Every structure is written in structure tokens, then in C-alpha cells.
Image (cartoon, rainbow, N blue to C red; front, side):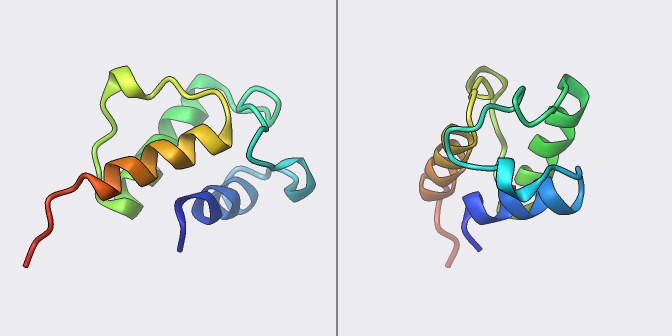
Length: 81
């Protein structure tokens, strides 16, 4: 599952965001996410993709930026095996 698809599914299923409100340019504020929800979402992403999001890089505004950050972290992970 892509990071963007995971974000979309998680926002709908876990946080009750309306699917039609979700898009790559949607900001977290527009989707009604507060700082606590954002923190939970970051933990969800870290767990799903087995990455650690550095605090200084967790400054994205849109879902597209969040997905790009996760994709970059996944690509830069050392391969095992």
C-alpha cells in the first residue's frame, strides 16, 4: 500500500475524515486534525512503514507533502538482506 493510500484510509477509518475532503493538496487543518491527532497519525505512519520521522522534518502542511516525506524515508532506509 502506498503511503498516500495509507494516509487516506487512516484518515477516513480512524479519524472520521470525509473521503471527499481528502486530496493531495488538502491541509491537515482543513481536514480538522489538531496537534494531538497529527502526532497519532505520525506514529501510525512510522509503525506502518517502519521509519522514524525526524521532528525537524515533520513540518508538512498537505497530505501530498506527508506522503512524499514518508516515501523519501522509505527509499533512504538501508536495505536488509
